[in-house]
Image (cartoon, rainbow, N blue to C red; front, side, top):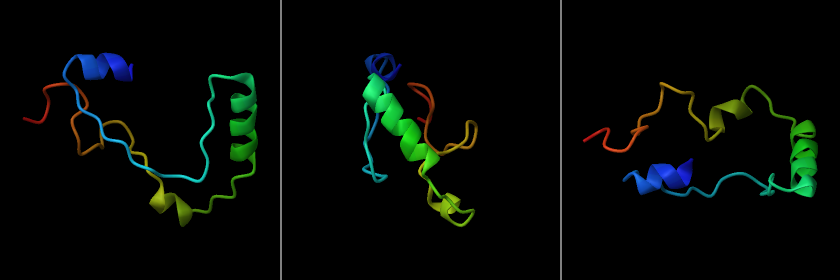
Amino acid sequence: LINAYLAAGGEACGVKAGTAYVDVGTFNGYRTALRLLENNDTTLEDTKNLMFVLPGQAQIPSHPGEGG
């Protein structure tokens, strides 16, 4: 989906965030990701620092050509 978005003229920027990277396209990576999520002791206070935005609340364009 990202490649199609970029091919259609969309722009992207990478942000280094988080504490681990796993390739969930492999069985080992998927299992590791599940273990990391199970062991994640996120508190309500921690959720204020998460790097995701709910759909409809983004401040950046969602589709190529949006936002001028």
